[in-house]
Length: 102
Image 1 (cartoon, rainbow, N blue to C red):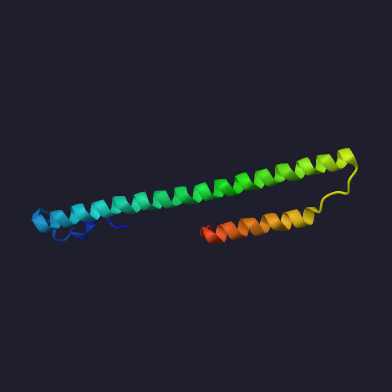
Image 2: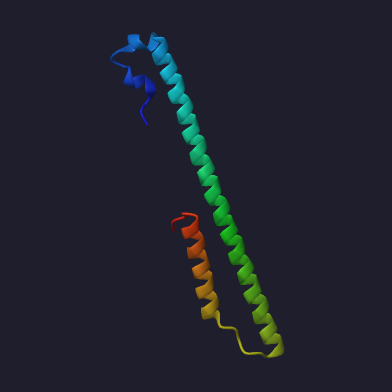
């Protein structure tokens, strides 16, 4: 983004005009709002990604618990391919819904 004062570099005498001063103050305010918006947008994506990671860990813990139960009681092992496929679908769906691009 250009420095606002560079725009008036050739006509520095215009910087004293009330309208120019008002315009510069307005531009600075807009720049601050843009920075705040970008920060908020980044925070939203971070929260979404944290939620995804929490769900992944929760799913992994459930699979580990299920595996231990199967080993303990001698049941047939779970279908990990289906678990992985469901996890991948979940991640891609959440990312698509929240415009998080991996």
